[in-house]
Image 1 (cartoon, helix red, strand yellow):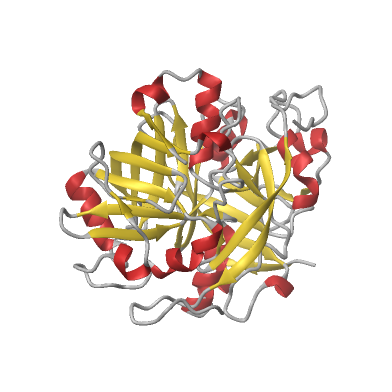
Image 2: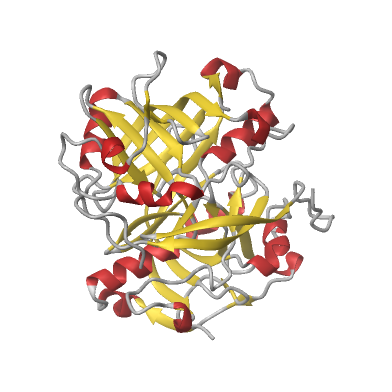
Length: 209
Length: 209
């Protein structure tokens, strides 16, 4: 049985209560680690705001908070133009969550939480070695939104995947890769596939693949 | 064992293969039904691009494709300024997926797939009665992105939730509410909570709630 809350009800909530509730409303979110560097310190920050923008050219977006614990990562992205996105797996969610602590700017979250920076000759930002899905990104568009958060859209320059999880049609089985998802600010989940459906057509019932 | 794909490898992929692969990279996505109306026909469209923008004021964003099956919904949003977001539940993912079929503009997806429009006196767009988490939205910002997709940011005016799933700190248990998530273009998943963590601090190990 649902009850209805008005905007006034939301405005009158205690700040932390409102933050927890509203952060739950967007549904399940991807658990992704953002890797950046200032040339000396390798930064790592968990983000749950990655969103698909397009496949051709391959583009991903994310929402960043400039005055939060994300400020060092955002500063590195603005200066260098490069960053990595790395799927968080279900067996090290504790390390991923710990990157959200407010470490000093000259302290690497890789070291602090116990994850391994993977530095390659082809890409100027650190990947996470423990991740099976790693994406090398270059900033394509960057702007400020209505509430002073910032949206960064990047194009995919490089991709690391385990081919055994890629189906013949290109679908990457992120569940078999043990990718985790997030709800609210701090809840981590594994998934169970219910169904995969064929392309829907008006004159046909839903057909499972 | 991961292998590395370059941007050239991605550019050279067959179009459908690339679409499936790139759509998998953003990780798990929320399964949400977008409700709109032109005053006569109630439209319903599945979207997997909803993203949290902010809690105060309460804002959600989504990415829309103007030349896709989403064009009627986007047109309704532009004309009226109002829309609803309704969580898809794991026991009717087939109906939710079927809304992605290209129905005629004067045909209601509610009727076509067998979901019930919930029309209230307080809100000018149709909710989905079968959903336990319904959000009434008003457009706050709207713009075109680098690849001609459109981003719609809306403020939350009204919220329907089952209070039994709201924790004392405001966290809404969307898993207990049976909200589904999506990977790629057509795979639907349920979730299992692994852990909920306390606010992370540099000098403390991750602590489970």
